[in-house]
Length: 115
Image (tube, rainbow, N blue to C red; front, side):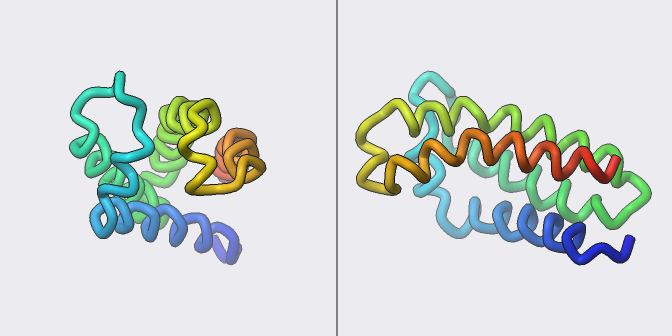
């Protein structure tokens, strides 16, 4: 695979996963209260992003791509929660919060194109 955007996708997930360990409180603060074990969920999702990003360079690439798609689906409630709760408008402009929801579907499609 020589497509630069494939490497970009892998890099995005690996870096995003690392950030879950560098700034876990930032991620914990955006998780809805009905989701238990929030800090553990942050670490688990960080591990998943790193592992799936790295797996894109192995023979398990298709599993990684499906994992990324499922992970992005799992993240949708967080994005909707941020969109509905006014306190997040202090963190990011409303248009950014709105854009994050369809962005998840664009990222899913991006991963799907490599299957």
